[in-house]
Amino acid sequence: MYKLEVTLLDFYTLLPLLLLAVFGMAVMIIDLFLKPPHRPRLAWLAFVGFIAAGAALVALMGVRGTAFSGMLVVDLFAQVLGLVAIGAGALTVLISINYIRDRGFGRNEYYALLLFSVGGMVMMAAANNLIIVFIALELLSIPLYVLAGFAQPDRASEEAALKYFLLGAFASGFLLFGIAFMYGALGTTELTQIAVKVGQVGASPMLLFGAALVLVGLSFKVAAVPFHMWTPDVYEGAPTPITGFMSVGAKVAGFAALFRVFVYSLGSIQGEWVMLVAIISAITMIVGSVVAISQTNLKRMLAYSSIAHAGYILIGVAAGNELGVSGAAFYLIAYLFTNLGAFAVLTAMARRAPQSEDQTYRTYRGLYKRSPGLAIMMAIFMLSLAGIPLTGGFIGKYLVFAAAIQAQLGWLAVIAVVTSVISAFFYLRVVVDMFMRDAEPEHEVQPAHYRALDFTVGLSALGVVALGIVPGIVITVVQAAAQWFMSGVQ
Image 1: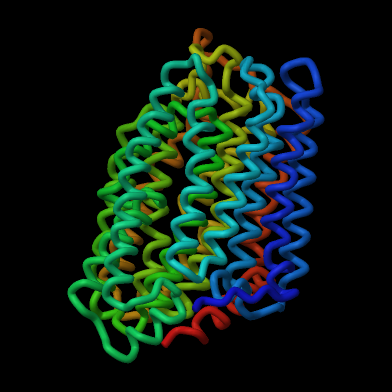
Image 2: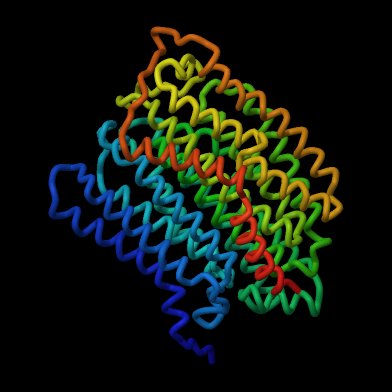
């Protein structure tokens, strides 16, 4: 008979998740007794919830073990990625406060859904069982489906939510079907036990088929090609702060699961799946970088950019070595500040009426003359996405490229370098429009300036620059996390 033993470590491990859940329920309950429709105080309550959950996770750093009879793992890798997800939620609250008020859909369940979704992401980072992976995936995804359509009655937002929900349901089906096959092949869903059994008996057709289906389900979540078709429409239609949130948070959770399932559990049969992951990575980088060139809408351009960056992070999974794990973790931290900062600028540039939001390149022409600080910050984010030195994006790319070379995947590193050069075109195009072209009067938009929004843009830019100039502390942390992670790989 299966026996569930609850220890003090279990409660410590669960504390960040409990805080996110408690604050989420508190937002919903307090909302019933407050008027008018938009109550900024509840946004700050949600922000405090994220800070409290982050503090609880920081307090766990240095603790190692398993919780709830092996269902959750306590290690530095889970803690680092959990903090990235919590950071994404906290910054999204700051970006959203004035945006949802100005655009007339200020309903406070917005913040509760953010808290619940981040709870799923934190759980995914610590999952040590395929069943927990599935539960966490649903916990993070269902609130995101609702948030993508939060701008209703805006038709584009409703369409984005429907597309995301339908394709997400299919992806969840693939994941669950893959879990069933893996259980049928090995008789367990616990990742640690899977690693042991695979090391003893090797691969079987049923196991490999199940792993392939799991790869499909998780590839959808990180927007890897060919499971990326939902991304441009959903990113364009969803509220701008939510687009930034899902571009970071969903990737953190998806890649945490990919590393746990493939590098950790199936590391002993890496030769069976590494080439497939490497090919997906290469195709994802190529498609994302090439198709982004033809985009005229910045949200769609950043959607294809997000696809390309998923390909870069997949290099770390394909490499399957310690440098790959640490490089991917650093990349996700840099991507947190870079992408959320870029979407914070897009939020500042969004017009108030949903039907008149203009995120085309022409809107950003001459931005330096209208708002020099905002233009400089946006330039920093674009340079980081392009991988220009002295930014966090450059260090992240360097680490994952080095991991590919170390794993004898030099051809993948070459493709990554070439696609990075290609991507520089559409990132630098934004910089050229802001600094070297004059605004067209009919498309001239005055950016919004709010303290919370400006603070987020400034903090994100500072994070990008700090990670590029003095990355030592963060590299030390992610290297320690990778060492902990790889010490359990068979």
